[in-house]
Length: 347
Length: 257
Image 1 (cartoon, rainbow over the protein chains, first blue to last red):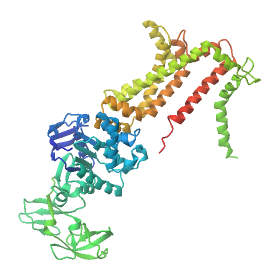
Image 2: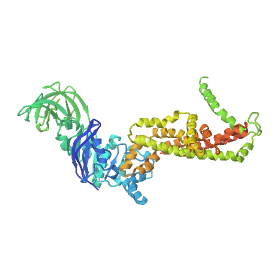
Image 3: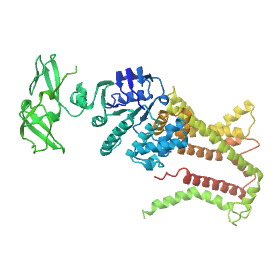
């Protein structure tokens, strides 16, 4: 089962703290959406409002077109996978997963069969009789997922579900979450502060900051063409080059960029992987000295001090084919379309 | 030499704690009619007399009744008070918490006298019921404090998950909160039972014809020392030890992984 979600003019404040400001968002049925942002950006508050644990100060929440703003969690077609899993320690996995069905009045035999089916889906069929404390973190995570999915929610909410897992397990669980979501078609709304996780699993990323939606769209668009400076910064590493915009071009310490617009101070962003070394194509940024280099397996991460602006430090990911030595001077360039230009935020 | 000092200290401490109990138990097996040296026995004579004493056996039954009944009430009330205060934001909750715990600082004598005055004024006769009420008064703060202290974020999150999965409030409490707090609830219950079982002043002030065991022992004491009292003491001690051991192996054992 699946349903769409709509937030309309949502505002929420805790006392004098404005946690959410004017949130408008449409999530399609069957979509996998991540709410991404730093701590305190309001993403968990938004999820709590969707789950019914918080009532917004203003605005509406629609699930499947129906107004759910004042409906308690019990009566919503949503279930949640909590950050700390919140499994019932005194129940077997079978009873944990079957809990929602039991509340729905399903008979013992039927709900046990269904619980075992769900445990099978997450690869824990053999552990049905165990208690949660006998499991590893990753396994508990799977039980929490099975428990939330057992009642066939229209929308599944995931609150930083992979936060407590180590990197390798996290990657594995990301793939599994994605494949389970595709298998059952339920709408997933997943909160995370890890942009790599968001890119790995989401159909659409919603970037939030200070209670507002900064940007939303598919991962590659968000990464390649971020709508705001915050988004550009948050979605991985980026170089900031201060500049001044004139009518036809942007003046930067590294040279003129062919991009006009309303005049004023701007911030020019360039991803480290877009800086090319030793290639004449593209816009030349002049010679630059390597001030440090570190090997990262698939690329070399180097810091560069360009001769045109020695105070500016650029970060670049250079191919590993050759050895980039500290102190070496190289010619750098970048394609004009890889530069992102943002107006400086006032103040 | 220095290595033995801690062990010597341990031995001295345990002797200090257990010698009186040991002596009490030993002279319960006295053959003669005075619980003082020299020891001549062992004999089960006084245990036999104890079991044959109808008043004593009635007092024992009364004590069990009062202890379990008052503890059940105290723990139930304490649990709901703790649940309410831990889960809901109430105006003046700090004051309510303080008022709930405050009776712990009032001496049993004052509690007993206060209740005695109130009960005589209202015209309710003194009975085991009134003693049990007194024990609820003294055990409720304790039960509340123990259960409140063990209500943490873990239960709260599990309760939230249960609600999310469609559980109504009564189901949340019965299926999640109480089972998760079982060790604390059991600890509060058995501590209340122990305190009620031992309690003398309130039981003395608030009972009349049916009395609890401590009150009965006190009235026996007035007719002088007798190994029968040692036998009662040993018997009560034996039951307490048995209960503690039973709890240790059943309720409080760490679940096997």
